[in-house]
Amino acid sequence: MDRSFLPAPIFFFPARGSSIFRARVTCRVLIPSQLVVSCQGGRGGSLFTVMEEAAPATDVVLEVGGGLFPANRGALSQHSRYFQALFFGGPFRERCQKHIRLHGVEAEPFGVLLSCIQTGIPLAISRTNVASLLEAADFLALERPKRCCEAFLERELRVDNCLGLMAFAERFSCPWLFSASRGVALTHFEEVAALDEMLALSPESLSALMRSDWLFVSREDRVLEALLRWVNAEPAVREKHFLNLVALVRGPCLSLPCLDRLIRDGTGNNVLEARLLRKLNAHLPQSWAPGKRGPCAERGHEDVLVLAGRHDHEQQQLLRFQPRTGAWRNCAPLLRRNLTQYAVAAVGDLLYVTGGFTREEWTWSPTDGVLSYSSWEDRWEEGPPLRTARHSHCAAGVGGRLFVAGGALDGGPLTPDVESLAPGEATWRSASPMARPVERAAAAGVGSRLLFVVGGLDESGSVCPAVQRLDTLADAWDVVARSPLPRYDLCAAALNGGLFTVGGGALRLETDTGEWTPLEGGEGEEDGQGGTRLGRGFFKACVAANGRLYLLGQRQGNSQRPNLLLLDPYLEPPLRCRELDPQVPCPLPIQAAATVRCFGTWH
Image (cartoon, rainbow, N blue to C red; front, top):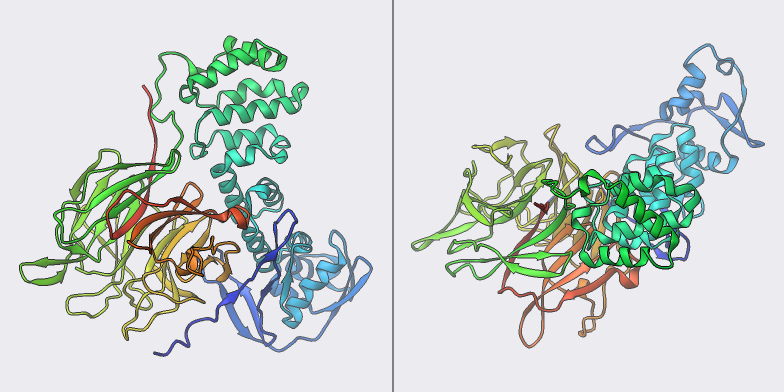
């Protein structure tokens, strides 16, 4: 099969380091010297416009920090709104000058950025220069180099630097980095609250975290404890903010031991806590008052639903894993016999089972059947049938809609057809067909508009290395990357703007730039067979829940056993991958898994 349409994979191999980024990485943004590469749009738009162009003659000398840099006005204006305004935007004296002095930017990062633009020399970003390069690119309105620096910092994101990167992103208007770092701070709040950086937060920044419905904690007690620690760091300045901030604690969700400890400690030696407790008692927040009711007092969280069991049995078991407690519980089973090769995906609190291969009497054929499970009501019901009966397809939720893509038809041919359905709708909508039809691929939704399909088998039966992306708003497909580890039956999940794949190893795809990063430490611990868990294990599902990745696999031994691994890309490599449950309480084989969003209530 001709795969010349696929871009070559771009690799980033991190090495261990001890800086605040916890990994020293040199990333190379490949810009061929004979090409001019410019960015159009961001996520959801085309990545590059590529034009052949000869190197232009210099017509101006820029003086920056004592250094002299010959340049071409037209070439710089193509890449930067700053230079466009400076050279052609109005009655500025710089329009006619041959020697221009620029202020507000340092010579070294300016020279690196200018060389990248003019000569095509790869932009080398490292831990030591990424901040200065991004600051210079932001000042000069060089959007593409700035986005590359931002993507580099997203790959460096860890629990112990997320607050610093969140402040940095806010200062320099880096929306994707801000969103990712804030997501890590929210989903790892208990770990972040123990850091000294937490004590440096402004009241506004702390309030923004505490008021989020998706602040993930094992108990609400941890939020109150973090607030008290923050106030205690500078009581003279912060005590006045206590009542406003404590109102953001979900009081009805506090445990009795926590309240008892506050009363006991507040009347003891801790004078500050005693004073704060008296203030709280005298000015009880309205949401804490007895008799008040709230439909969503408990913070939202995500649970993992797992379908497992043999297809030739009368039912397949559905289990629910609660990451906050580590508990498993049985749910209403899937009452379908001889149903296999279906796709599973979730939208909100609904789990969908679409299509599949089923047997009627003596023959097997694809089905257009759809079943939906309400995690709130613990009940299955029939859904609108697919427009096209299919099996071995993939599905994912994007922007509140369920999308199914590809798969095989009756008799074996592949289909590029794509359909979507929103909860409550009676019929499926057709979407643009895939760029390359595949079966047994992995799918994941990134953000509110992008659907990614990775790997799978193509029409010739070969493994397809393409990463295909559907912009659901524009209804257009693109091939945006080539996988360095092409697989079928692999697992994929989206987390904080990145796409993670597991199959032969763990990789992260930067969805905006198409850059792949092997997860350092993602190989896990030795599996006792001379390999590692992620390198040798066969995983049936990978889901993202509460800012972490959960992998369901089948351990090899005297007998096969399902197991559950936690892969946290925001922890240091030695702690990144660990086994949570050596034997998941479900039958084999594991069919599929998905994440559902949940809110608790109180009355």
